Length: 172
Image (cartoon, rainbow, N blue to C red; front, side):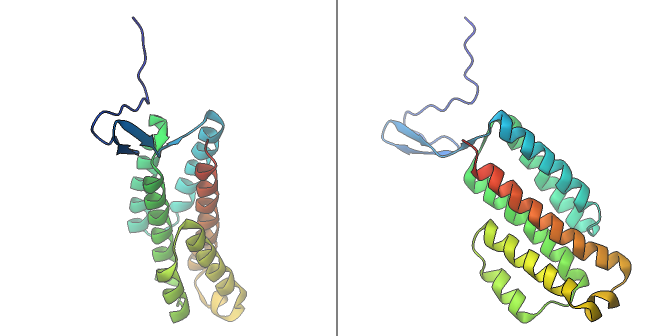
């Protein structure tokens, strides 16, 4: 008998990972990553890993660990929405840390970014702040060239995290 129970969820008195147990019925909240989305996710992970190489070492490590965890989740075939949000917020926190390590940010940015809820809000805030800073030629050009490149990379990285969020949320 060759029956596969891969990615199956069973109820019966306990709540399995990715779901909620209500009586004898398991309500599954996990996201099944389709093969179409799996390809997009894999490409975005590769791109995020490449972009993170220009971040300071601490942020490189943090992002690297998160990407490995995301790859493992993806290979398992299901990803819990809470895990996705936690990982994406971690990527954005690392990118923000890299950004503020080279850019004098306003108190308004600190307040808005700390009050942001959800990945989309965090992506928009970080991208807008990076663009705003690049638009201020005097401040931007006063930075060493490596820091200017880091600011540009943070912007692209944040945009890719937003795209990854879209792809994972669109998973069937």
